[in-house]
Image: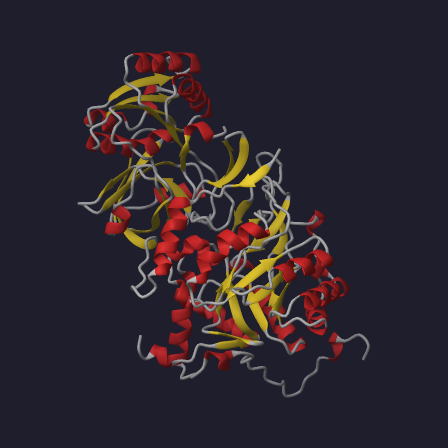
Length: 320
Length: 292
């Protein structure tokens, strides 16, 4: 353990320095996890998404499992802002770990006013969840299009001086373009990505397995897809990319960092192994020690892409 | 309908604040996932199987009404992804064992069915808020049906330790499917069995039985699990006679530790509908606040 502690695990996300790159994914974390892990070990806290309006959440069933993953349509139950400030925030005040608040709203103006109201001492960054597939009809979300992403990010940027992370959706054709739009509008980081819009049908009843009909797939099943999106986004923008999608082990986290992630979020894995995040932190340190990598930040963008000797890829491009 | 989320999490939030305030003390986990060793995994009747595992002292300290999240082995051709919540059937702090009673109904329990003595099973717990026994209660009535009988089982020992007499009204489709009967009788509880096949399990007959218990001064509180119909009978009687009660509720779960809000149910708290998580705020709730 003492040898491992010589590894520098810290990473920078814009102005914020995190003690290590591991944090929870929004919606999979709550105060009660302090019975499972030492909160002072986490890179950051990321809260469940809060909204201004009180939300009951979606009709049940809210989750269904599929091989290698989980489809959820929880629907962001929210107790509103005063409850968050008075009751939830004090739980985190005793820890020396930055508190990132995930927010959502139906309009760009709503996002901005919520961000402004939450720009208070004790909150280290705002994560704008513009990508939840379970809020709007038919799974739509701001982050599906570059224009709406740019607009909401611009409003948010005007509303807060706090570091602004924008959480993107994997449910769009050109995630790098959306990432560029967020960067151009002033985001300090992008989180890539949210869950993958999906569906399951029960063969006994012929009914959808979820009360909300559709939901978001998470877990190991989505990791290769989101890893590719992180790789693409990290090439497209200069701001840090935070990887999120199916990370269960230190090896998964390392893969994401090699693809270009500056930090990672762990979600569904916590449902199976509640101490997954601290296990991953230990695993990162052990990997760096074994491979003689002094700083975990050295892994970022570390993927080795070798040039082909005689690239003959012209057939891929119909124009040339 | 006004929807409001529950704000009364006194037990949990109190512990969280206390834990964080003394940050100089070394932090210690109170919920752990561990690899327990299977001691026994055998059929007890045509439907239920009895699973006993060796575990840590923390797990073996589980209280009646609490549950564990089991990471089930994968049966051939199936991939149960999530853990499966399983009520505590028995806990022995001296032997460091916990027991479960389960019925094979899906991929997870088909996986449990494969376990042999000596195998390892990843268990996480104990979880949730269990039953509470008031030291002043002389006599309680436990009413259960189906899997609810397994959930009520650990009450027998706890009640005896509390000096509380138990009458158990147990309901099943057929007499041979009743479980926990001997377990209660061993703790000198009276067991009244009612079954569908003998046409004794209807709410009217159960109500007659419960009224007699109340009339004889043998019901300071109701404890129930496994049947909405029988829960409603008890709610009616509890209201009529001003008796307290507790109900262990079920709901599909994902995380089991209050994170995901998959297992919520509505509760009637002084006329207001309040949303609570079965895994974290329960699974044991006030009888009068529960909605079927």
